[in-house]
Image (cartoon, rainbow, N blue to C red; front, side):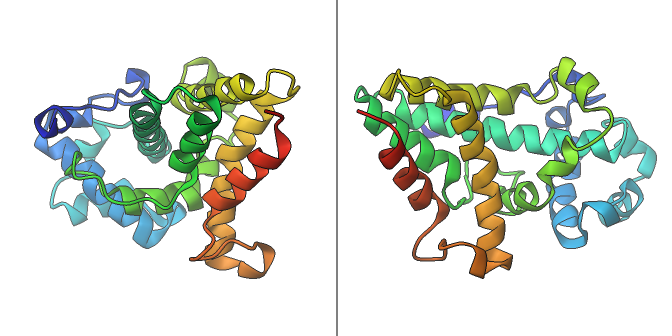
Length: 224
């Protein structure tokens, strides 16, 4: 099993990158240290020039992989949601009870992140911080409709649709399963942000993580 997981690859829409960073050591270093640098500097202050200096390469070499830093952010966040989807499918595949399956899915989607040794070149804990703080910058743009048509956000939407189906399996009469599923994903990031920066605006803390809140919401909202 460990060998199988070591060979696992999260598939990303090929139009997001110019050259697959998984295909070379340099590409993996771009991803590894790009994550670290975005977390340290913030996305607005992050540049390919700074990344090139950090990995002792050239700026032009990074541009052979990604057209710009916006595409790089979409790549990183797409990888994150693909990783979450892999965890969700793996953890729920053999669960037959619809309620138990949905609660497990919510736990996977909203819980605190731990580093996954299956992907040595990506620190999922740091990437999670980037997703919490920066994910909205990947889609709050003038180009969002065109990029959506190109499938840039397909993994996120697919994950949301998996949760939507689980909601409907639990309560077929609930009229807003898609809205609830997307709310769980988006608001889980929001509540992690509140927990870390505006603690007076949420009951979530180290003892009561956001996953507890969303499980409580589901158990009290759906009929089963």
